[in-house]
Amino acid sequence: MTYKKDYTNTYIVDKNEYKVTAPALFDSETNELIPDDYLDEKAVEIARKMHRDKFGLISANDLKKYRERVGLSQRDLSELTGLSPNTIALYESGAFPTIANNRLLKSFINNDQILREYIENNRNNYSPKLVQKVTQYFEDKHEDSDSNEVTSNFNAIQLANWFRVENFFARENNLNIDPITQMKVIKLLYFAYGRFLTATHNKLFDSKIVHLQYGPVIEDVHNKFNGKTILDIEKPDEEAMKSYSEVSSDAFISEILKNVNDDYIDYNASRLSKITHQKGSPWNLTASGHVIRDQLILETFERGEEK
Image 1 (cartoon, rainbow, N blue to C red):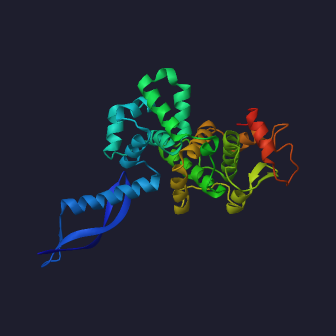
Image 2: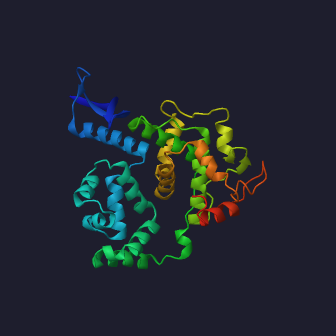
């Protein structure tokens, strides 16, 4: 005779440990754990889902639902994204995507504007069949201009945490990358704010951006990490890791953050300050201690003087 009860076990998924509590089978006489392929697989599935949730990875179901929504075959999605048909099939079978491919696919899943831009800008590179399918999708949606409005639901601390964790991952793979400082995080956030404002005419976060001695300062981030120069020597805390996962789930915003990070990964805070301190910059045109107006930031980024 056997019986079931919850059992906690530790699983390793891509070098990360996850404790999973799930039903397991036991011997009624000895109370020993009995292997059961079905129950064991369910527990493994829970661990894999925890891993996806932690790092904001798409699932097989996410891809299938997206293809169904737009009306695409696996081959269509392969043509659209430039990923091989085998790669798409592997992801729909449950394989974890690479970081780059995850960002790419999430950008399509979370923001139809990305799909629209791909088709409009690369129409001649796609088959007429694919172009027709995507065109029909948008026609059926009868989108108006308001439906494409992009807004941010994140605060400045969550976005700062994204840069902290991204820096940690980069340092894991490259010993030449230094731990990120508070000043650099604030500079990167400022550039991300300007890019988001230019693209959407909406705020990336609500925190005030203030003129202080060392440049535009994100008030909430400065207050949160006041007194700290280097933010993380070791792995960032759980709050930061959670923020990273949440922000990464928004493909549009995480893509902006990634681009800013990639553009300035070799810059230190002092070098970034030279950009924000230029004559005629929003910082330069704002009195010390005063809030820098969005209109100044928008105009400067639209001219490409800051980016």
